[in-house]
Image 1 (tube, rainbow, N blue to C red):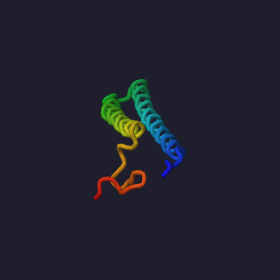
Image 2 (cartoon, rainbow, N blue to C red):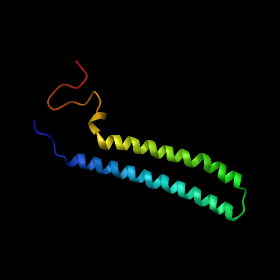
Image 3 (cartoon, rainbow, N blue to C red):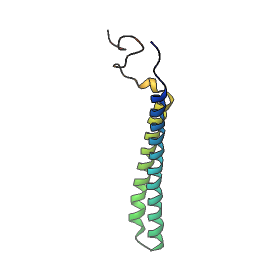
Image 4 (tube, rainbow, N blue to C red):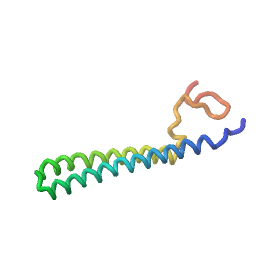
Length: 99
């Protein structure tokens, strides 16, 4: 049996890269926005404890989330066949992992 076209695989890979890029832009925008809020609070002589306290929690949480997202996408992009489940059949055969 011949291998199906690689076009759907390229489309999926492009979508995965786009999603990883969107995550970087989104979380990078959030971190930049929080840093801007801290600078604005500093310039307006606002209470720094609230803005700094929130940012000390929010920025590491978002950066950790970004790390997890990129780790998952990197694993999918590097070795997509490692994530195929037992219901996926190899070429011309029985499902893997079942008797």
